[in-house]
Length: 351
Length: 209
Image (cartoon, rainbow over all chains, first blue to last red; front, top):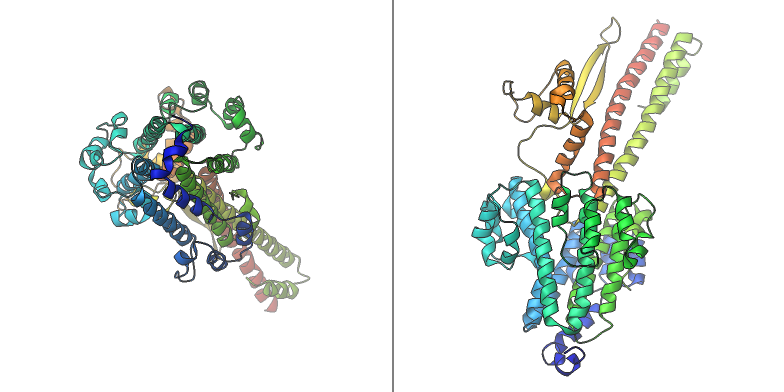
């Protein structure tokens, strides 16, 4: 019953909630970002990060540093924290934590399949995979020729198996099919995660519904914008939208027929939570849309920590760390390319 | 190319009208060359920045070197070089031109042709290409235009990163395409600049004789 989590939550989840709140306190602040934005070289960035929780992960990296190295090492820290929480979690928290990684698993599957289609070396592809999305038989993906084989040989024993029912065909894998597969899998994953959170009930269901609905709506907008001018038909585009969220179903109908960014804007401005996002952009412009969405997401994720005794804090922490890593990647790229004047184009402050 | 050498040469032939004209032509080419180089640096910088924006937007795993296609495929763009006889002497000024998004032309005409020696690049005569473009625009009452096919080729080349890519990646592609055009202009301008410089030097030598 909602409101009575305080009586029983701490028995199994209290310790890990305290741990994750402690981790949250280690997120970089605006002062840290200001220091980082003033760095002249990637070695300066490394020096500033040595005073943060990323220090032990970067201290042994030789110069010259590369932006991919910064991202890789910072991601390792997130993976270590996640694994430490997962191994101490009991049901249903352990399942909840696993759900958080399925998105990365989908990205890794698509990376391996696409790379194999392009005749890349499997070992090279495995090194590029996100560590949170790894599973035992991932290397075997390289032998599949179509989705049916992909499912039968490898994915049937993974958590992604239930998501394949909507996209199993015997068609050979090509770039368009793989893209549709990626988005169909992600749609099925989001809907499944949403149903799982609803089953958990209480504050977890309430807060996660809001966060996942925002994610679904953002994906719908990105799919629409990215498919403008491509061969993806309106029907195929409509099928990639999730069946929940603020935009479902009427917003999706209008997005499916949008042919330019201004039409997308006209659809989104009918929904008050998204009006504020699009009011920051000028007409015809989509460059700053990503940053506007990230800012809104960070605001909602930070609000998740205002309430106790629910699992959404774990999801919020993982997403905030991923945003932090994106920020570090962006700052590193701007410093490496000597474009420091553009560094604030995409950095999203968390605190 | 040293500016001091140009100034010395300019001083040596001062007073000779034709030579002055050649010197001015050389200096104009040099100015155009430097302006183009600056424009090229700026366009490339913009392209790399947009590529970084696309990586930030789409994710590091989607935009990386691991996405590039290692299969044999036709070149989408190739460079044509022609040598023009400038005058009766053995001075030749090479001219460069870019045939962009030519792979659709090769695809259309490949069915009846012999297999070329190189599987990766096909060399085509410009007259054959223009015939093919006419055939293409007249074919079967279809509404497909050359522009639509070029747009399709652009999307195809980006498809290694997925078919639903961010507009930032398309912007990066446009910037690098512009940079390629500028590079060819730079090559042509350099060619004419070297030719003008050679004429000025010949003028100096003749004056000294």
